[in-house]
Image 1: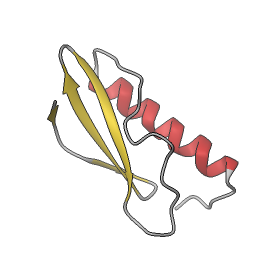
Image 2: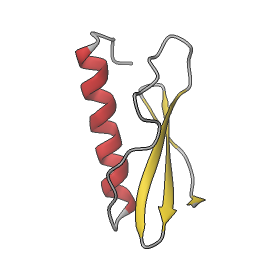
Image 3: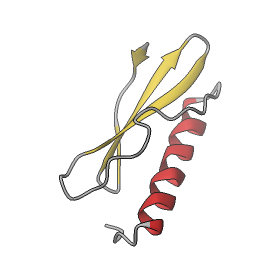
Length: 72
């Protein structure tokens, strides 16, 4: 699995990874006060990197909203 760049979003690193002909992402907190997401690698795969990065951002938003975390 090859990684390509890192995106920062609301205190998380979103790391796109190419797996065969599809993309997936790893989501990792960058601060100790943020929750660790239940799955570090998003199970959704898509042919475009932008699609999985956007899905990861939506997942972060949903989890932070559910836990009543602030948005920075």
